[in-house]
Image (tube, rainbow, N blue to C red):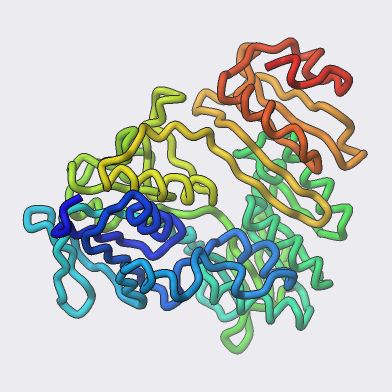
Length: 410
């Protein structure tokens, strides 16, 4: 690699940090600049709604690299720095304050921001969105003090925050407009099992219930107004209704967008051959499925960051990873492998008894496995992954039978 190459990474995120690491691992000896608007060095987000929020994990466990790693690998870490513009014709990014930083190869790892509710009272103090480390710090302290919490949205963030709050002994009401938690992600069959889990832990779960606004006193939230007109008392509110990819730089620069993110090919290269994208913001052409996929989970950010760094260094391979995500809620640990496309699934097969606390679920279309999930079962991940990757045709009766080894079905 030519020493005069300058690699600029916008987003001091998990994806950005992994890209910087893989650039150096690949032998790229040019200048590597990692720019982020947060003041924290790159960290992983899952602990913010899981172990760190509960209080089981210490702060130093969230970081991607030790503090001295960046200087030790000659990576310029520019924290607390916002990139305000992208000039493709000059090969420059503009930083807040007017400084311009030239690049030969640029990675957009800008992540995403929480969707915010534009509702009456939405600006009251005590309404929180969880995305950054400081958000988790505030909630962790608040949960330790107890009180009444209303969580808006029963997606992954909402459910994990709810579980963490209950671990602290907080009274929680969880409001979700869909018929079950995780309805859009896992469907009603498995979503209702997560609903049962939270109700068993004392959560007041109200499905089929939207939010119309917030009430307050002296500038602070005191209640959540639901779609039925009921006011749910609240000392604090956490809103978890999804995220929006941070595509502002890419859009303003005229890069192609798709699925709400930056369109990239299987090498994670955008419509501009000198610009890559990875993580939440990337809509990547995945050779496994023959179409674009945008994944908003930790493993994707980590794996795509590594892949983008190698691709920028000229040593990349087509990114063909199977999507993966996990959750920890109370005594439930879950891992999910696979991808259910826009056409969805037509069958769900449960393997084992959910009442036992150890079970699996599979999503099928036309008799083929699209995705599989293990719950408190830790030795079946490989065959689940293999079936989801190969879209294996299965007999649903044998798939549901715990006495039939999954390895016999792959």
